[in-house]
Image 1 (cartoon, rainbow, N blue to C red):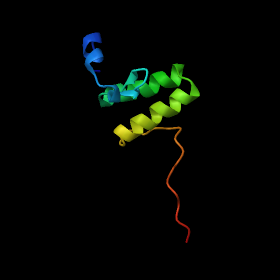
Image 2 (spheres, rainbow, N blue to C red):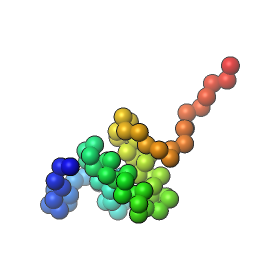
Image 3 (cartoon, rainbow, N blue to C red):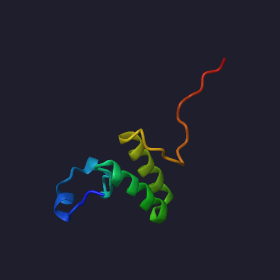
Image 4 (spheres, helix red, strand yellow):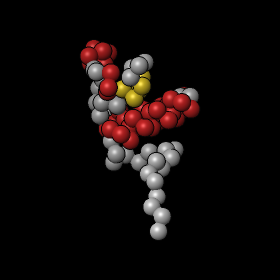
Length: 77
């Protein structure tokens, strides 16, 4: 994982965090995004879990994120 020092973390934009209001769970790169998913699964509330999952999926669609409901509407035949 890329080293994220406190100096670098304090310079990051709030949009680089999964929970920008609290500057929690940095998702500035792919490795940190995966780590954010793992940490929130261990220690996060259910609201934090869904917020982090949505943020990671939005920023990195290639990552498989479990626990998200499919928001696409299915077409009826």
